[in-house]
Length: 268
Image (spheres, rainbow, N blue to C red):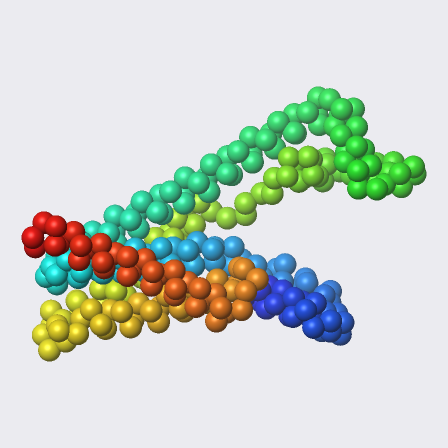
């Protein structure tokens, strides 16, 4: 899975920072690299899960904070909270679907063009490969050997043009799965700030503490989801968690006082 790859990369980064050559070698063995390449799978959707969850919990808690700051009832909090949860979740997942699909469509369109040029004007595309590898430092017989190897394999040739000339890499994931991952993460994480208010419907004793419980649960979840970013960014898990906790906390505090200020203006 992606976590295996992330683990290998973390070990490699740690080895680099500490200058530990032996650990670096362990992170670059043939067996480890081959296993990593065969196990990536669903890990390519980790970004969709992480950012969907972060957006879900922060925006929902901002709604809860704003309504609480305005001194409105728990019923209003639930109505607006669930409206935000479903509305924004659907909007975000659709946006992710369209964005991912658009990137894939653009890549495929450019690949079709490169394929057409390779088939219809191979001399020009061969010269482009030659110029690309010349810039990499290849000269003389080595340059011509590299050009011959690449242009002898049509797929490799086109892949190389996409990567080196256009700087485009194929997105190996489904727009539908990416959208579903975003929606699920958004809804599940975004529901956390509403848990105490939903529970208060059956247990009235916690009504006076609903907001405080929501604050604690939200803070814990934001930290956990934020720390998960360490899987896709080069940052220690606790620093990534604290960073996101500060960002989410700032958004919540701002929403709370905006609600408080606006309620005073309109006389609620």
